[in-house]
Every structure is written in structure tokens, then in C-alpha cells.
Length: 258
Image 1 (cartoon, rainbow, N blue to C red):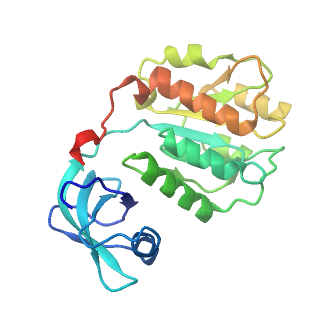
Image 2: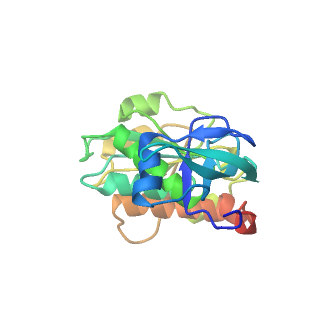
């Protein structure tokens, strides 16, 4: 199966190097053996967020355990956009959708913020971390984004690292067009940048005033239509990646290296 295309890509928290045998978690082994019915020696791709991406062969150990013996690297670890997304958790399944899409769009850190109008107040960090991990495995990025603890708006704003610009989605129309701001970023996303999107119903006046008083904040808008909260975040991230991020680069794809 040396030339076969890998069907499974997994994140692990162990060092990766040629010749190492990496044990899979029970959940990963179940996925490989019971769900995907993979055979011994079938190729698997592993990554750990720091050692790049590696190809190896599946080594079952009975019906419920398995490991991967690494054979060769596929891609070296590369710098990724230093792009953060701060957001108000949403109701129902919308927060999970937002986390998944933000991961696919290359966000390095997700920061949930409790605003006055936040509706999704039951925030399951563990479940969302699993959603982010699955999205990272699927979209072939080399890292998994960090998900910060939920914090109140005032604490979030007071603790913000002032050297990092914070672009705030302002549904009132006061801000500059996001595309214009993104195109003018000299250092691009690589220099460190964050986008904050509000809850369903938007920020209250006191929150907008607090944001406007901070020198690191730039208020932006994303067109003439009112967007759902998750749509605004996804659209904003796409604009930033297209005009100031890694969508401008050819990228590091496995292609024929599998």
C-alpha cells in the first residue's frame, strides 16, 4: 500500500519522526478499524502542530487498538496566520458551526465573549474543541486552534493585548469597510490581528462606546445587508485571509507528496 492515497488524517499529541510508532487513542483506533475498516499497513497521515505532517502505516493490535509507524514527512511545519476571532456564543448549533468554519479559515485562537445580548450562554468548551480538532484534520491545516475560556465583555476588553489590532464588526454602519481596512494592513494577518463579531441583535450602545474608546480598536462593516452573527464572522475572516492573509500565497499543499 506504499502508493495508496491516505484516507485518514489524525492529530496526535506526541513527537513525530521517521521510524516512530505512534499509538492511537481508543477513539482514533475505533474510527480506523471499526468505522473505516482499514487494513494493516494502510497509509495514515499524522500531525501534531509542531513537527509537520507525516505519513505512516496502520498497525492494528487486536480489534480495538492500533498504532501508526511513521515512514516519511509530507510537509514541514510552516508559519500560519496569527489571526484571532473573538465572538459572542450563539444559540443552538450555530456556535459549533462558527468554530468549525473559523478553523477551516485558519484562525489561530478563538475567544468567546459574553456580551449583554449573548444568547448562547451554555458554552461547552470540550465539545467545541473536538469540533475544531475534527475540522483541522479534515481541512489539512497543520495546527488546531486554541479555544479560550468564556469571559465577560468588560474583562475581555480590559485584558486585551494593546499591541494587537482589534477589528470590530459594527452593524450600525459607523465603521470603515472591512475590505478597505484589510487591504491597507502593511504587515497583513501575519503581524497579529483579531476580529470581534457581536451577538444576535448586535452590541449595546455601552459596549460600542467602550470599544470606540480603545486605541487598538477599528470599527468595520461588511456591506449594506444585515448578516447573521455566524455569517458576519465567516465573511469577515474570508475577507481578511483574502486581502491580508494566506489566501494571497500559493500555500503548502501535499499534492503529489502523499
